[in-house]
Image (cartoon, rainbow, N blue to C red; front, side, top):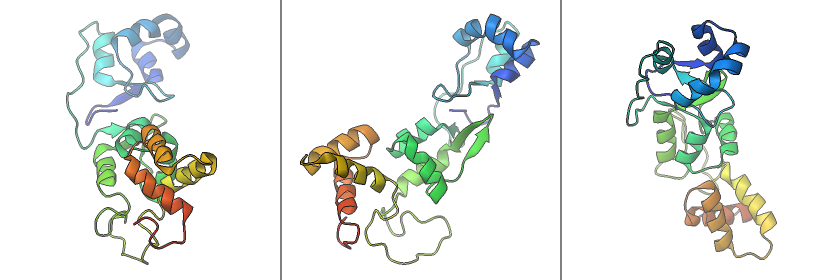
Length: 204
């Protein structure tokens, strides 16, 4: 997570601020630096650091703590978004492609989403409340065949059904909930919808 209002810098930026090449930084300084300055996105391929913490470390001053608590404008990583929405990290790409989430913002090569957007998505998931799942300003459109129509989790449910064999649906739903988040009851409904895609009452 990149806290709201806190500029982030890449490892290349850190080396530049230190006045050395990136190769020299990684070989001679990076290990000690990482013991004192936390990576803002530990689950990302790209190391990002809080600029204020970096500058304090390089100046030989105490490294200030990051802000406590949560702010709507915090920028969240793929893993953090997946945890809040209760889905697999691999589903985030589908969400950002089909409009369930925006494409996000890219900071030094890492895709991030504002916390406020993720929480809005969580609280207005498909089928939750009147018009749930519609994008802001989008007309109601044709009636869905079931509450989970268009939900990327249906693909996960279909794959689970194909591999389940004679395993009871409740057990499959419990395993999906443990692995992907949401409740077993939600996954039972998704499994039902996945098994009967043309049944108007499947997910009821």
